[in-house]
Image (cartoon, rainbow, N blue to C red; front, top):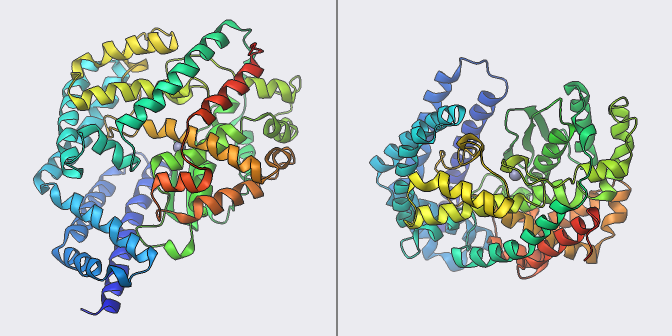
Length: 500
Ligand code: ZN
């Protein structure tokens, strides 16, 4: 085989993988947005075939031979090619180590577990879901060994979502969060609460739709390359850097809900839209890790979107969209309302300050489940105790407790910490950005173009070319959660008039 031929084969392989992925995503998107209710059957059949075919393609012995050949010629490859080979090799090895019958069995288990979890959540019946959780934990422990047998099982799983991350680092990270934020949350709880009642007036969905268009415009999202749809749970889906879709959910009794979903998903979208052209149709296209992705979405949502200058900048326009609802409200009142801190039960509705504690609780539980220190049966009891301890709230039932998230029923153990890491990465990035740009002057003028350009230059353009720790280091130096806890302490002490 000539090198030139091999490179062409590698291009074709990656393009085929892209095509399978695109087809699967398009079917998924159709299913959750516009497809009529009873049409899932055909899509299910097609998705099953596509998943099987893409797995076959990746684990084909020819693919193995091709990768070995390219590895022998490593010295002749440029950085982009080397990285492609590395990523393909990792995926190939991982997939090849999982016995096909176990893979099939696990796929079926996840499918069944999702269905059972929905029912268990509806009726708040943990006992129904418990046997599935048990088996999901067993499988994940076993798969962790296939992913990387040199690591402890939970470390191997963490590495799947944020490469290079492990329990040792996360224990230190969460200890810092716990130490700095729990007293702050307690002090906020004793301070005068801010009023957010006007957020819960009637906000018609149609006006909210127009408001979403406006927010996307402020963010500088090119609408010829990014669509918006409506789903129960908001998400971002990327086909290429020229075709990204976001979704939101309109709650007529809460104008902040969709507002901040759109800004959050818009942050994910800007990331995907900013990846370099030459990485498209390869394994390097698309955002890097869950943590880095969340750093971008939560950057726009919280650090920018919930800042005083941003709220002041968009508020006059907001009043035009909702003249009746906001006629007796000022920009400052809006700023305070969208930053109201209220320890609560549900992670996805949590405020910026208490959010990380929700994540920390899940991390503690997962770590013990996968580590074999905790049995599935004990999860509700531990969950409720940790919510009491860290957030001071009583969990009334499992539906508002350990059954609230879909991650475990989907087999995702090790995913949660990325939400907290992303928030912390973002705060450190902001600190560095402030040295380079007049961030708040720009935000006050409603001009986010330089901010996005900074992020694009340091993060977005690289797609999957670098490792998470390198991306963070290149953008803002060695990761240090103190930037995050300092930011939160300063912001919320000011809002709640705490003496610090
Ligand atoms: Zn997100």
